Length: 80
Image: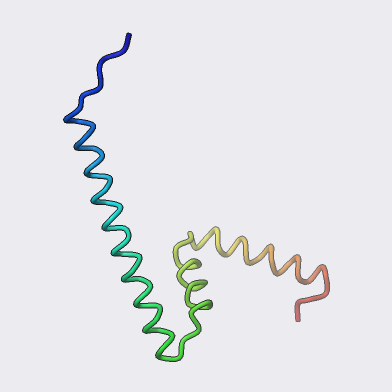
């Protein structure tokens, strides 16, 4: 049989997760507010989200993907 559940330890873990989830919600609300501010200033939020997504990625990986995308677009006659 396995060890009995350590109630205090489990409670501590659950409470830590709950605090982190609340912090995550607060941060998500803050991010939403910044996007709203950007929109109010005339920025395209959809494009801004794309910029954020691109900046997160590794530059080498991003360039490789862009090169492949260009190649595919040329192959289907969609590139200049």
